[in-house]
Amino acid sequence: MISKINKYFKHVLGLLILASCTTTSENLITSSDESLPKNYQRDLQDIYAYNSFFENDLKIIQQAIDNQKLSQSALRDLKLLKKNYQKILKVAKYQIKLNPRQEYSEELIKLIYQFNLPINISWDENKTNVIPKDLFAEKIKGFCSSLYDDSISSINKEINKFAGSILVIYSDQYASIVEKIQSNNSKIYAVNYDSSDFQEFASKVLGIDLSERRFKQISNLNPNQVMNFNPRSRADIKQIVMLLKPKEFKAMIPALRYHGGKKFKYLNFITSLEEMNNSLELLDYEDSHTPISFFLSRKIQDEGMISIEDYLEYGVLSDWLLDQVFRQAGVLSASRNGAIGIISYNLNTCNRREIPLQKISSNLFST
Image 1 (cartoon, rainbow, N blue to C red):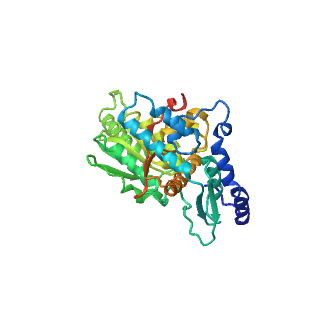
Image 2 (tube, rainbow, N blue to C red):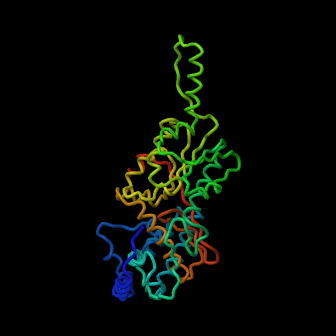
C-alpha cells in the first residue's frame, strides 16, 4: 500500500499544487491538442474509459455518431457518451473535501491532473475519511460492494457455467469468504491450506497420494508382476478456486498443474494480483483464470512491464473520483471501461463493478 505523507507536507503540497489546479485544467481543456504527446491519437476506447477529458473528445464522438454503419445499440451508447461528456466539460469547478490525514491524498492529486478537469480539493480536519485504508477488502462509498466481493461474484458467475464438483483452497485469513463461493448445480469442497509443502498438499487434495497407496497395495499382492502405473487425480473435481495469500499462488498453481495437468479449470481470487510489481509475473499463472480487465490487458500490451498492485489501487481511486465528477455534473448513468472492470454508474443507486476473468496465456503480452 502507498505510504502516508506527513500531514504538514501533504497540506502544504496540496495547497501549492491545487491552488493552480483549476486554471491549469481549464487551459488544458481548451488546448487539448498541445497537451497530448506527439503522435498520440485518442480513440473511443480512451474516451469510454472516462479517465481524462478534452474538448476534442466531443469531435471524435460526433464523428463516430455520423458513421452510417452503426447498430442502434451502438448509436444509443455513443449519444449517451456525448451527453455525459457535454455535462462534464460544462462544469466550471468541481469541489472535493478531504481530511488532511486522508490516505492516498497524493495519488488523488495525480489523478486530478490526469482527469484534466477543474477539480479543487479543500482540506478539512473535521471531515471523515471517505476512502478506507484497505482499498480492496473494504467497500468504497458510492459502490455496491468491495473489490473482494466483486471478485467473488465473478468467480461464482464463472463456476456456474459448468457442472461438476468444485474444490476451494483457502488460506486462514480468507476463511470468512469461503461461504460466499456458491454454485447452483455443483457440490463445493473447501480445504484449508495449512502446509508449507505445496507439492505434498496438492498431491493430497487431488487424491494422488491415495492413488499411489492403492497401487502399492495391489503391487504387494503379486511382487513378481511388473505393472505400469500413472497416478490419477480425483475424477469428480472439475474446477479449483483459490482464495490464497498473494505469494502462495506462485507455488500453488504449478503444484496443482504438476499433479492435475490441464484436467481442471483453475480460478484465482483477486489477491493473486496483490504484491505483483511486474506484469510479466502473470505468466506464472498460465492457463488459470484471473480477474483482469480488458483495459488492463491493453495497457500491458502497450507498455509491457507495469506494477499490477499499483494499477489496482489506481483503478479503485479513479473509480471513486469519477463518481464524484459524475454526481456533481449531474450524469444520470454511464458505463465505464475501467482499470479493474466494467463500472455501471447510476446517480440514484450504488455503482456496480463487473470484473472479467481472463485465461492467462502468452497472448496477453502480444498485440
